[in-house]
Image (cartoon, rainbow, N blue to C red):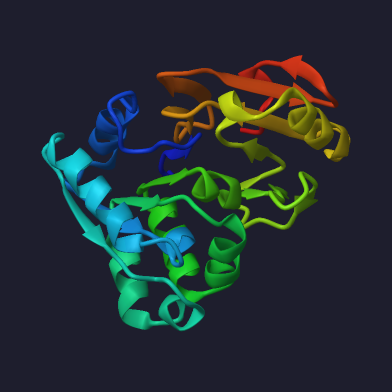
Length: 221
């Protein structure tokens, strides 16, 4: 059975992210492999350090994996680390860079294999956006191709900070029938191995289909 997926609305690895303890337990391991890919141009080491401090308090170690450019994603040694991982976490920043580095790469295929073998896969902000397909394009609020770990679902992270006008535009541009989920910071939309969805953390998760509010039951299993 495939593993748990967590789509986090941003401000990851902070006090309100109470779900991280649950995800760690679900992984069955004590190590979290953090890919700071999306933060390649914004001090990726700091992202790894923040994760390490956060998970140390939960009794786990963090292994930062510098998959920052396309050659890194095609490196078999990096792919092996991801393939063997029980918990992989994609940091936030640029969803477009994250997608371009990982799509159809050895590291991405390794991540899929790990998830299919029961590993926990989490992504925050850009990481959450890119794990879906289609993906919200932050440059204009429209939609583009994502990595597709979760299909027929799109995510708006930092939803508690979006203006009404910006959210309205994105919802209007969404393909008909597509669930669009606004996730607050320090909040996760979690898909359990059986396909059930739930929300956890400090904020709320808002689901829309064709611009109309829906509930988690409307999300793809």
